[in-house]
Image (tube, rainbow, N blue to C red):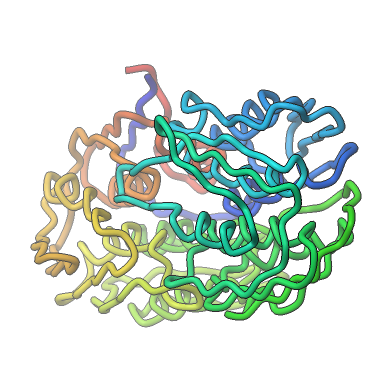
Length: 417
């Protein structure tokens, strides 16, 4: 396994280009199942999760060709409706093939994804929606088995605004008979990007990006060429990296409107963020101020940025209160940050962080994707050497992060453990 080695203390300077969004690319790749023929998806990041989705589509019968920044998917001969445990267990987003398979083939046999490191994320709302659309749902031996000759439009209320649930049911509804209305839908930019891709295929969708989405079913969809939106979480992560190192970096190829809540909180610390030639300039300050934050569904502060902001708060002036409302087990980075000298106390779903003058480099272990990002950020600012093991976690969601940070002046490298 690889590990990331960081010699802290370097001030980040320069420009960084933001890659395509993993969380937009995965559902769009799954949606190609709906349109027989070859679709080409651009601005796709080079990540382990993308390769896993490619393997899953191959298993279903698709021909997948992954190149730098581009994925060609020929789904003409998809004949196998089963997504096996061996693939689903490595990536929860595999469940996104469930509804496209049912909509196109009339059946799907998909392994239950179960929990993950940051908490249980059940798919009960996906299944409830499918049943409302006339599907027969059974759970046997750890697999969800769904059958429906043809789905029919329905009114579906989601108890919580689940992103993958909204995306799955939106894909199902595109080929259903009649009109489907999804209420309390997730509003994330990734949901809107999927809707734009589906509309380019010929789907009739209104309201994506709002909490009520209306889909009028059509008889068939056609393949597309489509470019994925930039990754708002990667953009936020680099902003925090610039802030914690008191650096000055330009974030290129991002959509600022997708992460307003993140920028607002970073600015609240005293860090300067300004627009500059189609990008954003982030200038750190000598003593960032502590801020409170609470994770919320979009457009609130994203849970995927909580760990990175906590890393910044460990060296901020004052006390911050960080409340996690999305996932019940998303403070696993706390123990590792404390090994670096951070002063953090966890009470239930709240972390109380008292800023310290500096962090010290230490051997650390990654537990999940965003925790990995927070520990790398902390290592950039720490005195001495930080070694982060289990680097495969970071590779699930950040394209060549050590190369991008090196180009900004960070002393960071990848080594074999």
